[in-house]
Image (cartoon, rainbow, N blue to C red; front, top):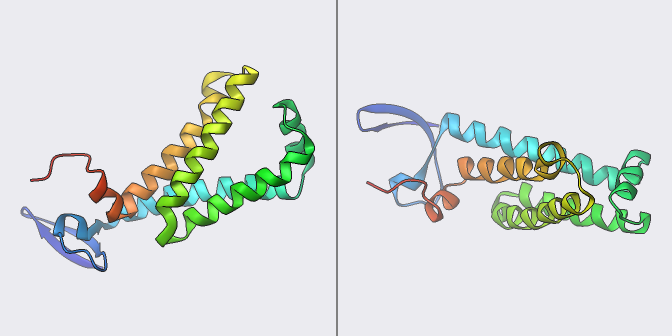
Length: 154
């Protein structure tokens, strides 16, 4: 951790190894922790869901049947979800993991639309998780902020 003075104000930041541009070389301390918390919440939720599918827990089987998925597909969905979550949790592959999870969550949205679930509580829930995934990654990964700046550079 180091203190960096930027336009008259000091901020705590972590220097990103290999970064050369000072605008992308530091991750503000509070933003870094907010990103870690957001990513951690998404990882915990999705890992819990994946383990439930892998163990074929009764509530998971009932919920999947209500959504139209056969019992034989539940284990495979759990494996795919767990691979995506692990890919997201590993720092060098986190952007790839976020992309894979976005595809997985898109399928969840399509499923909820197909069965006519309520909009805000069921159909949009995967988008809430995606906001945690991408928001957390954006706050903690300078590479992503360099690729997708939210404001014009000075």
